[in-house]
Length: 85
Image (cartoon, rainbow, N blue to C red; front, side, top):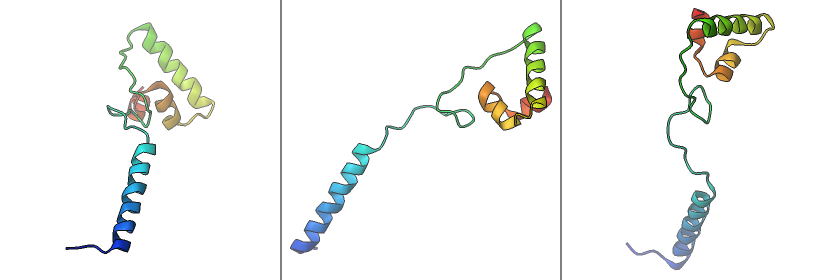
């Protein structure tokens, strides 16, 4: 298959555009973001007094009208865990 001169010009323009788009795009991040965050939060196990304080803080935030989804993102926990507490 042979391309004509105008077709070759169009093809080169398409290739040039694709190369510029690839160069301008941000590099993909490695790992899986948690709850839509760009950074993976380190898991933390709360026990004893810390858990009691965390539970009180979550209840206070809910009384202020903060949504469960926002609290989950802020504290890097699942909404199911908030409802469990």
